[in-house]
Amino acid sequence: MIKTNFLNFKKLCIVTAMCLSLTACAGQSAQMDTTKVIPDPLEPFNRGVTQLNKGLDLIVLDPLAKGYNAVLPEFVRNAIGNFLRNLRAPLYFANNLLQGDVGGAGVSAARFVMNTTVGLGGLFDVAEKQGLNHEEEDFGQTLAVWGLGDGFYLVWPVLGPSSLRDSVGMGVDALADPVRIITFDEGEEWIYYTRNGVEGLHKKAEVVDVLSDLRENSLDYYSAIKSIYEQRRIALIRDHSYDMSTPQGSYDEYDDLDNYEQ
Image (cartoon, rainbow, N blue to C red):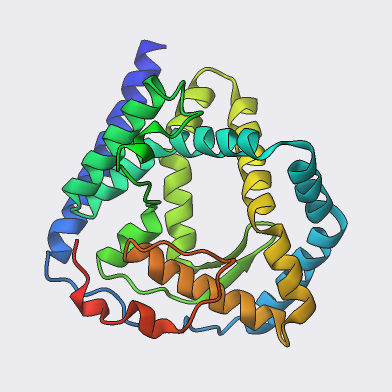
């Protein structure tokens, strides 16, 4: 067991060193991609997958998400969301460091310690009440800060919209996920998969009504989802919040990418 943990730690150190080297190469002056519309050369394929996901939503996921909202009181759903978010705090911390955002890393670390202890394992977001606001960080955002472009738009079955860059980022985050590392090392993989399933259901339940309305009222559901994805990713890269339930004006709300401050 000790040998296995050492090997995992060694691999993590090697990956971290490679990432830091790439950061150094990119330099503090690297400009993020200013593309506001992600290229979509695979549109026929992506539209097909979107239709598949739409069918899965109507038959399976929407009923589950609506049942989740109906059965669980809001305060219980909030506690579940806080707990799941707290489990990903180490990834937020690591990505903040890789982006050169030392202040953000400090906030992520403080949030994790405070919510894990005083917040009873993360069930209560006591850090938010102390002014330590949550900011979602992932490796896709890190790659964007390093200056890597989106690549092309890509829709995954069940997982939904992404891009080539963010798909790579999603894979790296999965490999570096402490929950995955610990549970796989202990032979308790079911915990990792259960966490992912509950997390997916919780996120779906948060936007199920918005997506249902979008399906019914948008002239082109595919284009509407793509636009929302593009705006949300730009907002997250710039450390802005994004609420799907609030109509977004335009990309001008997030103007001047070159003025992004880490």
